Image (cartoon, rainbow, N blue to C red; front, side):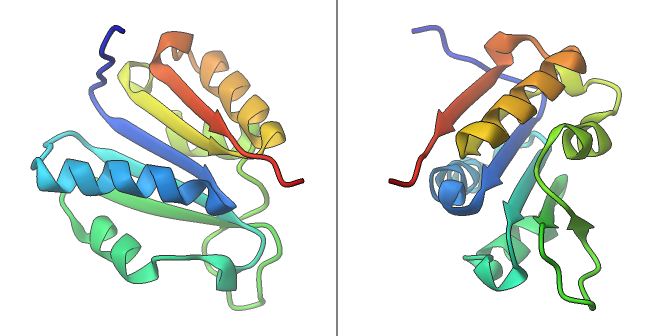
Length: 137
């Protein structure tokens, strides 16, 4: 299998999709990976955000950013609201060079469809998008 690389790494998670992506962020830290990292994490409510302490540590590292998206925010929520959808992807990843990043996406099928489509609309080659979907029975 061809090994993929990117000038930056984007981890895009919906709900419990954070679990496999967090392991990638951990490995980047262990290996002192110098590439920029954006972790975009969507949940229904802020109380569903898991691993808050670790996510805060990731956000404090150089060239790393953690962005939360909440679909049903409390009045005092100051982050992004809505879904991890095409509009959110365009808002977060419309910067020069984003098409040279590697995107790892894990979440429910509708989120994956929206994210993959928006990334390709931004010029990201499909070979730079790795997706893993989960479904509830």
